[in-house]
Length: 249
Image (cartoon, rainbow, N blue to C red):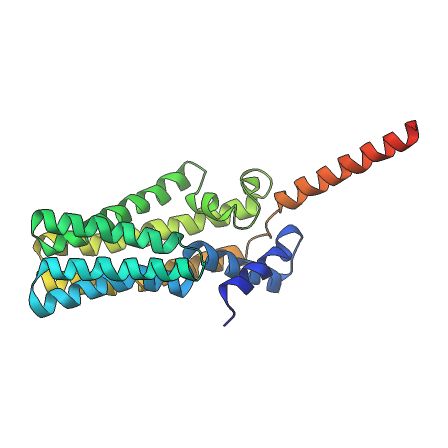
């Protein structure tokens, strides 16, 4: 498997021109890897919750479990900073853990450690579906800058807009399904059972959504690199200006 840095570099080449099936697959994989954080980002958002429920299962001490989860999130952010890596996924993880710790300590209910994440998941599911219905699929807004196409897919590349819409619906309904499992457990399930189910449901829905996104985008037309277009226009304007200046002199 190639490193994230290498994948990102590979994405730069085919994004501005028509690509064959192989090129389209490569750029889609690179963009998804960058946007969703890859394996490392998934680990950073999963491990704190795993440690919390593991600690709580052993000693039933909410405070100790919460502090352990918060500390490990902080350590992962520090490691990212020391290595000068991208920290957006680590920071999103520590903010989520921080809110979970706050909720759990305020209410004294271990289930509330997971409540902010559940509410975020439900809100995100609705955002995916609503923006798709509105004709501005959220996934296109997220991945457009990664592909260097910005919003060109809205009117200049209808095939990609259709793919972004399908993928956004996929994310929305997958996350709704996840919420449909977790919220009843939150209200009526056993605390330890609920915690483990929450952790288990962290990875499979995510992988399914990413896979479907990859399928839809890999079959879509290649992105239009509007950044390259703007740079080309600037170079043409400079050349024209230089030519005019040479003619006048």
